[in-house]
Image (cartoon, rainbow, N blue to C red):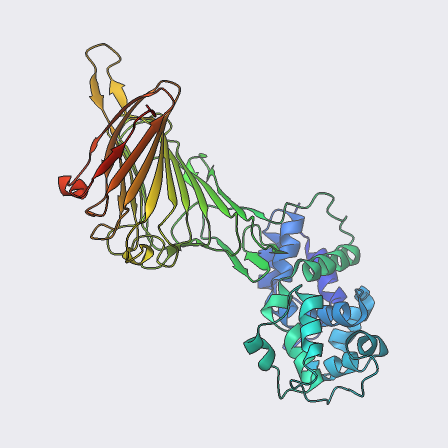
Amino acid sequence: MALTQTQINEIFAAMGLVGPPGSPNAAPSAAVITSLEAIGDTYAGLNALISLPEVQNQVIPILAMFDLSLGHDPTSATLSSMVESGLTEQQIADAFVEDATFAATYYNGENFNSSTIIDSANSGIITALFLNGLGHAPTLSTLEGFFGLTLGQAFLAFTQSNAIAVTGTINSSLTQILELASGIPAQANPPTPQDFTLTNGSDSVISGQNTVQTTTPGVLVQSDGGVAVFAPLSGPFGNQPTLTVGDVINVQGPSNSLTALFDGNDILTGMTIKGVQTWNITQDSIGPGTTVAVEGTTGSIDGVTTLNYSGNGFNDTTFQVGITGHGIDATTPANGFTLGVSNTGADSNAIVFFDPKSFNPAGGDAITVNANDVGNTTGGTSTSIITSTFIEAGSGGASGFATWNVNSTGANALNNIGLGALGSKAATTLNVTDDGSATIIYNAGDAADWANLAVIDAVGKL
């Protein structure tokens, strides 16, 4: 159920964002009302409303001042009266700083007020604000950025920062106020904050320190990692990918993942995927002859350390990440990369181009290739032609992996692997293990890739 025009007007009134046309606190425009009504879900509409500039700039700072100074939320009547008061933001901030509760929390016993100049001697107030509001201390350079401001100015600057605006506490508090003001029942089962599902359009999942902002589904939440981005098939026929050109995924922290489905051919260039350590990609097409290439642009794909690709059992599928000239992981070391390829049929490819800067100039980088039921036989008879899956990884030039650890599994499958280093001659060692599967490994691409291979270790492992 979508927000109604009546509810939208009630919410704006609860936040004090009402007034004659042209005034700073004018009622919502017809365009705003139409856009919010067009969102089919009530709670997605609330999140979209909270993201409006007037809410972010006028309402969120006051809510943050209450939370940091008094430790509780204002009522909707108090919130609206403060927004409508005519006081400047600085006057409101100064009033909070000189409140007895603020003083007891941040400078109990000290002779401070809103005009006190922040310096190294009293910077503990700023550190306390960071710890209370964001859960971490400021860096030295951030702390010094407050020096020379009055305490009132510093408090206002902190409450107006993007970091405060997207904290889960502030978002949750404002949502509750708006639910009460408009008569919308509180959401019983909110979505898991770290899980996001992309749409067919251009989506963003962007994090700062301790925060994640996303336009899909439009919520603002906290996260220090563990962000799971899902890109299923969607659209009117249920077969359109949702990992698309224009998407921006830029997250921080460990244990982030991307799970994406494709159905057929797709070449993706103008997109950003950073800070996602694990990718799980599946080709869901019903036939052979498909290519999916997540190429990106220079520096736009970084942070991936494990890449898993499933061809869904089809022949002649190609999956590629990066391209010569702008491969993945410009700032993330290539050493220790894991490439998993599974369920690919005959004449299939899994190709990963790395940025040359990701390799150690001194050499010695290692890659693990987990091959599960790759390569196949065509025809299904004893006269079948055995063909392979080509698994290649390198920079497309001189930089590459010195050690290749290949694990062949698949419950007695035939793993027929064409292994390639994409033009690098760095490989010196090949270690092979399997679980009893029949395993064939041979050169793929340029034979010179293996010119310096000195050790092939499969003793006791096959």
